Length: 82
Image: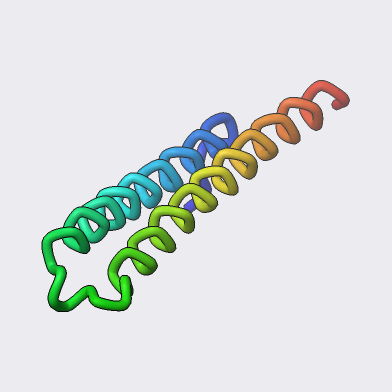
């Protein structure tokens, strides 16, 4: 089933916002947990993993925003030329 062409870019942006927010919540929770779990976190493994998850979420949000805006712009340009 095909989505409405007018809202394809917005759906991409919504999906990436959702994925990035879940990743940020998990990353921040692990980051805060890494300060509490001192005996387990001797080599700062949890801190490194949590910062990696936060960074990946931010990259995912930026990529999704870029793709959504690109889809919106491309569809507007292609309909104006017809």
